[in-house]
Length: 454
Ligand code: SAM
Ligand code: SF4
Image (cartoon, rainbow, N blue to C red):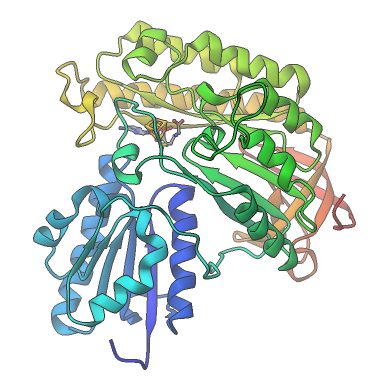
């Protein structure tokens, strides 16, 4: 690769974990002397950080890649990298399908990007998908925000949900040490970040692979312990965590969220289905009753907590009555937000091979009915914000109205209000809510509060 004009462009598909990985890989590239290019066609290194959770996400990657592969015929110095979950799933097969690709690298290899590109520079085509122990990254990520940051806490997943490709592509659980996590947060606090979201596929499974047990026989470093351990990091005023699995969600964790003022009362706990037989077929390891008990316990201590989740409709064999159990759960729990998806058969997962697949029409119809109910319920739940004073951490300008800024409440509601971003970015502002919508709010600022750690 020539040393002049090193410009890169990253396109990220999928979840927050991928976004966090992209920020780390961008940091590695900038450390190597690359500069960000807004337009992919002006970049001489293109990286797709891919997602394979549903088929449509995967197909999108191939259509983007096809265009750059053509470009490479005219510009042989162009470096094409496919990272993330499609890379892991396809491995060598991806090179056979798109021979113009220089580097195929699974998510566990994100921190090795520089080494891998050095090998590419010697003229090799590289496939890095073997399982490895994820090494601590010493390069600073290039973070998209200067206010909020993601911090990886646990990589991989040890579950075996019958629909899900994640364990195949992200490997087994690997927890970072509490010290490494705290150090990263201390640096973020020093750099002026105000909010950290701790990330993991199943964040509440954190620490099961770390050594040490307490006298009561539980793991020494659970997510609960981690929250207490990082809570006093100077400068960091809000701590969130995602995604929680109902199987590992404990009363101790609920109590910690209640007791620790910086931990936001915002819980993302996917339930996937409201029907016990479907949950069993999915191998989720809990019942809808257990799920409801978790939400009850959260709301008993924190009645105003924001609750969000993921759900799948049209799982193989799901009957109309079973789907209605999902509607019933949504009706009764009244989520603040719900990510919904039609079941998509994924290669290498058990459910993809079952014969009781539902038609696309049935799945689309159920998805539409569920989404309608979610909007309705979120709208009702949003009403509790009407005329209330909320503390909003300002992140950016409203892209649709430059006279407004936008940020999030403690409960993660997107909120817009009049103000100048140059003055307010990173500030926590008291806002009187004047307009309530299903998933966002508008208000009037009352005052800029002190932003020192409480
Ligand atoms: N580990 C988290 C959990 O178990 O709740 C979820 C992580 S997964 C990357 C994100 C979401 O993708 C899941 O909660 C599920 O709703 C959805 N998902 C996974 N596989 C899917 C599939 N085959 N079809 C449709 N949605 C799927
Ligand atoms: Fe996928 Fe299940 Fe693991 Fe979540 S817990 S990432 S849905 S296998």
